[in-house]
Amino acid sequence: MQCEICGSDIKGSPIRVTVEGTVLDVCGKCARYGKSSDKWTPVSRKISPTEKVVITRRPRRDVFDKIQDEIIPDYAQIIKKTRESHGLTIEELASRIMEKSTLLRKIEREELIPEDAIRKKLEIALNIKLTERVSSQDQRGGGFIRGTTLGDVAIIKKKAK
Image (cartoon, rainbow, N blue to C red; front, side, top):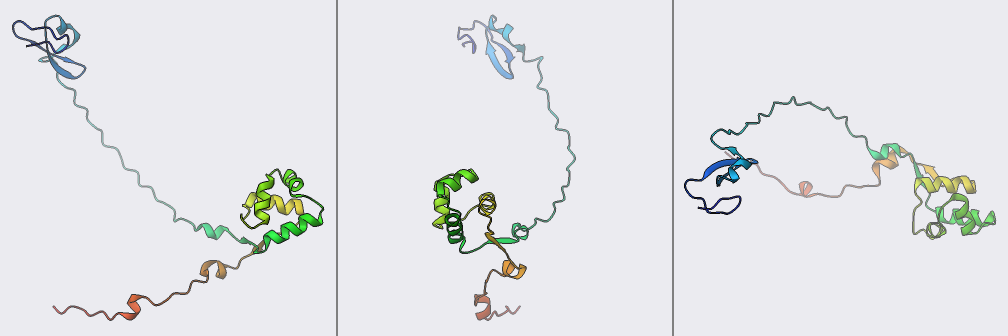
């Protein structure tokens, strides 16, 4: 038999030791690296019961409840006309509001809808209003008309017992 640490042949009976939680059969020289396995007993780790904390969650608010204003449909034309009436180029307006000129070009071409921060900067710099109030009915309904469903057409028969 060979020592599991150094690999040398063991003459006689091997010594069983525990090295870092592993039980090994080793020679007399390597036995000093571990504790005798007959003296060693594994320590049981008891998990103390933890109290469960019940978290009551508030009902989530609809994100759209906070939104009261909506950007007007012809925002791009208004921005462009107002910028030109003030005698500003896209680059000059971009430097005034600390944004890139390419972003303003995309907004004027209606490729991008301006985010709230950029919209506010444009409103202040050009002295215009780009939003309009939305009534709660328009906001909630969204123009959704319920069509015919399978439940409207199907006749459901109950099973007789």
